Amino acid sequence: METSSDSAMPVHGKSDNMLEDLNLVSDWLAQRDTDIDTARSSIVVLAGNAVLPVIEHAFHQARELQALLLITGGIGHSTGWLYQAVQQSVRYQHIHTGGRTEASVIGEMAATVAGLAPEQILLECEATNCGENVDFSWRLMQLRGLEPEQLVVVQDPTMQRRTMATFARLQNQVSILPDCVSSPGFVPRLTSHGEDIVFENEETGLWPVNRFIELVMGELPRLYDDNNGYGPAGKGFIAHVPLPEEIRLAWRRLSACEPLRGMLAARKLA
Image 1 (cartoon, rainbow, N blue to C red):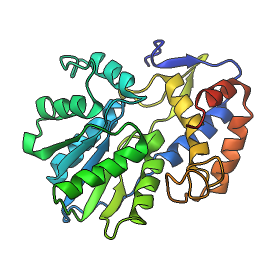
Image 2: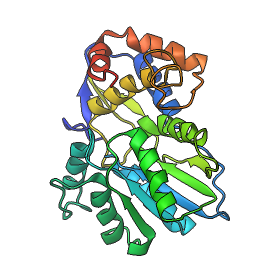
Image 3: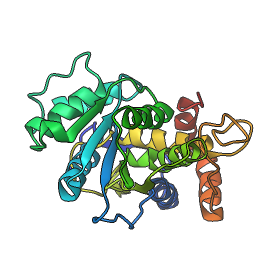
Image 4: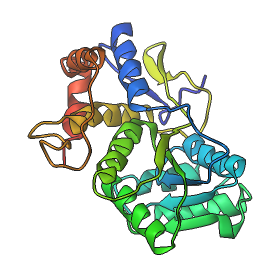
């Protein structure tokens, strides 16, 4: 198993219980729906991210469904991570990244490597956050007169549930919204390897482990429906998200875990 500095993380005081809780929360965040209807007209909406197996899953979905692939993403907090993933990939390292939007980089990946036809790819290059990914994608569909029966939504799995809640918020604001189906395509799992924490999955093109844990640790507070969260009672960025009790308890334990407190502080709400 690969244990380089990019894919492994030494954590003093780690425990199997901590990893179990991280995997539990991560699995829940990576909302997966199983009701994709292959007979209905679809658009695959891929939110720009830096996880190559997720991006390639969106390419696969577009091919399988013979669907338009709408890639949304300007230049934001994760753009540098996408550049790094592309530059380190044998398959994609020929693609120029510097200064380009996430959508344009991923669009070139789709056309030159995945073999999608140019007319099958639609780029939205202005969004800089999850809310704009949803709002600007919908605006572009409206401008193009696109009326799919379902949207297959693909996102970084740590942000998949929030993205679906953002689409649910949009559903309350527009007259007709297609059915939205969540399909991250990849669910990461952590495990121990000696003194390190590594990914159990064999895929390449993943986050550095510390980056992944920071994202997981910072995501749940964003889903809260209170004064500080993104729900209707807070910032109003997303629809209400019910939090299962087992997720609340796991989060409480993780928040009290000394090795992870710095990661939580690093992902303050914005």
